[in-house]
Length: 146
Image (cartoon, helix red, strand yellow):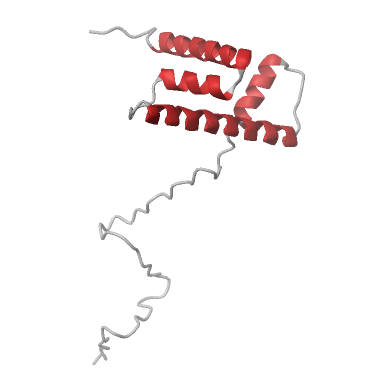
């Protein structure tokens, strides 16, 4: 006859079978075995490279024969991250001042003018407006409404 072991609820569980690992999960018991993805914090870059790939593409469009060092690329990447954070913070602050929950193009343009002084801000707004209008016209090019 086989011996059956009865386990007390207060005792620690033993390994049931070799090769099987038991894991403790926190949260709901949906049984799906899916794990939640961790959200990245604002300052963490994680696995992404930021704007390095796009900076390199622009460099090759403007000067195909030139290269760039990794230190310079890191500096430019950090500059881009810093500028976009400043613009986003100022646009959010302007939206709060106007008691609006949605950022509009007006707040973003005003934030760009605040962050980038003088003529540089005007050129940035003009280039941004041009880029958005070309994006919108490209998206609606092949489609017709029924």
